[in-house]
Length: 600
Image (cartoon, rainbow, N blue to C red):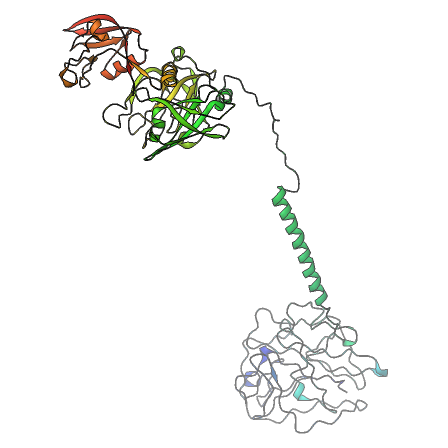
């Protein structure tokens, strides 16, 4: 009996019938696809286990382009059940000749050794060989279930229905490939009656189109014992566990990242560093000088009815007197406000004690303040070019700013001011020149030496875009700063504290300021037509006349009228001065005693 196995092979996609739906498939000119032999009628006889070509007009099973199988209509009457006890019937006679049916010629010659094709599948390839069905062994010996085969896409195809008793069911001939673990024979020899065909080999025939990417020992989907497919393991618990593990890893990673960000790493990093020192510095170092001078330096904020300004000053005594520049307190006028801020941050109101525009100096006083630190005063006559100096102030309102440099020149005659136009606000200074950076806001601050003693009052700078002075529009320090010598500042400050006014030394002449020659020329007439030489004054007593040109003062060359004024104001009233002058082409020397005039 057939043991429920269809005798024909399942049609693969590469052995489809022709596109003519009503025309049976097969090789052209009646050639058998396996043996290559054609019968006399042009119709290829069915090989062992194969289904004969149906007559013309009868529908064949076909495979749709997407791989689905469409079976042919069942036979009109099933064949009778075969009797296995009877002797095997003789070979059936060839079917009657039928009309010639056109077959499509294969693209290559049949493989007589029945080896699997290699390379890409062609539109036509030889059908896999078939084999005879194996009879059921005696005593009910178990036979493995039939192999379902594949559908041409690498997946198992469902088994067809069992054939009818007594013959082969040709309707399932396209859906049942040979069973596994047997070696199909292309031309099996007839077996004696009652003898069961034997399995000749355990090797499998490799089908490259049936089960791609599967081992040769498993041509179809894996099956368990008795043909039962093993169940798939549940994926739910695995996915849940993976999700929990990912959450745990993410939490740990986030915690580690936060710790590293806050603490700089999992381990403590310590770089070598020196310990704290006692804070002491050499007394003559910049730090040592600043530490001693800063407590005596103050910042002044001045507000008037028309303008305001910021400057610097320093404490003269413990009574609250503070020395600064006249142009710092000038915006306050007669009823403005002046606020003094000490280096420690304490503030107090101040009032003007006295001021002088000719010297550009002023004294203010604070009351109700204790613990003041007066700065010691040095001697500007002892200063040498190249001596180190430190400037302290509030440039651009930056309090307690310390800069350092050297004395770059001495007795540098400068004039500053002159905004009023009448000359009453012009200051004449025989200044100390320094390269210590001085900027607007440094005005009135101390210039101290290596012993932290005041040797000058910072008053003017030379800017790149304009002349001297610390007024608006200055571009800042270019390394040319000027300070009033402290010897002159001390004398003026004493007079301002004592009387509220300062006195100026004079010689009693009117100078020709338009003279362009070398030296200071005595004018011809004074204002109102009076003589240029004051009658009874120091110059008159010394014998100076109108038109004389003064060229030296105390052995120092004088090149202009401004320089002569600067040199005279560098002295006190009553000092004796030696002069050299030119008269009618002759040089004359004389001595005079300086007079006194009230300042403004």
